[in-house]
Image (cartoon, rainbow, N blue to C red; front, side):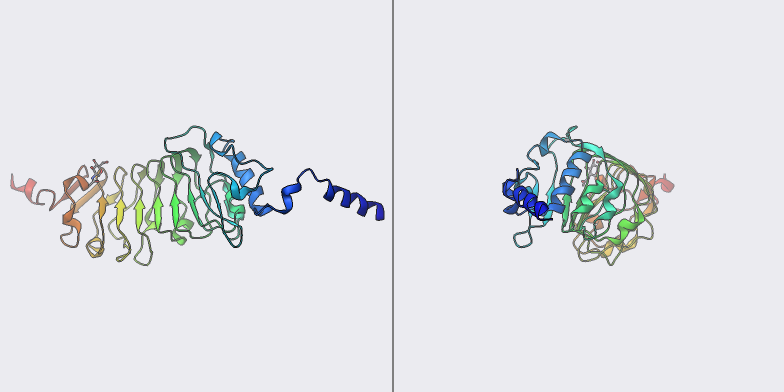
Length: 278
Ligand SMILES: *[C@@H]1O[C@H](CO)[C@@H](O)[C@H](O)[C@H]1NC(C)=O
C-alpha cells in the first residue's frame, strides 16, 4: 500500500504534464474537443488543438471567465474548406447541458455549457442527429448536410437558424411557430418540401426569413402580414401558389422575392386575374 502511495506521489511530482494543474480547461471539455477534432478528420484549422495545452487557449474555442467551461465554438471557414469534413456524429445526444442544436459531431454533446455553434462553410456531410438544448445560434450553412431535419429540433428555440446551402429535404415546419423567438431563419437552397399555408411566425422577433430555392408548396399565409419587423423575405424558386396576402410588410419586397413559383399572384407580382383577362 505504502509503495503504491509512493509510486503515486512520484507520478505526481514527475508527471510529464506539469501544467495539468494550472490549466483552466475542464478535462471533460478537452476530451470532447479532441474527439470532435478526430470526428472532423483532424483539419488543419484545428492544428492548435494540442492535448498538452490548455484548451481555453485553442483556436475557435471560448471558455467562460468564471466556470472555465467552453461556451462557444466557431469553426467556420471563410471559404468552403474540404479540410473540415466528416459526418455529423449521432452521439451529440450524450451532452446533458448542450446549449445548441443540430446534429453535429457527437463529441460536441460532451460540452455541457456550449451555447452557440458555428460550423458553416465546411464540408460536413451526413444527416442530423438529435439536439438537446436551445442555444442562440445554430449555423450550419454551406455544407453538404442531407436527409431531413429531425422533429426534435422544433423543441429548441435558437434566435438564429441558418441551414442554407445544404441538401436538406422534407419537412421544416417544426421550425416555425408564433411562440418562438426566432429572429433569423434561413433555409434557402435546399430541397425542403412542406406546406407553408398554415404556418405561423413569431410576430415580434422575426426579421429575416429566406426560403428561396426549395420545393415549398401551398400559399403564403396571411399570418405573415402580422410580422412587424420583417426586413428580409424571400420565397422565390419554390412551388407556391395563390394570391400574395396584401398588407404588413409583404409589399415592401419586390418581385424578386416572389418570382419562379408555381402560380403566385398579386402585388408585387401581376394581379391574380391577369392571366384570365388575356
Ligand atoms: C431572392 O432569391 C433569389 C434567388 O436566389 C435572388 O435572385 C433574389 O435576388 C433574392 N431577392 C432578394 C430580395 O433577396
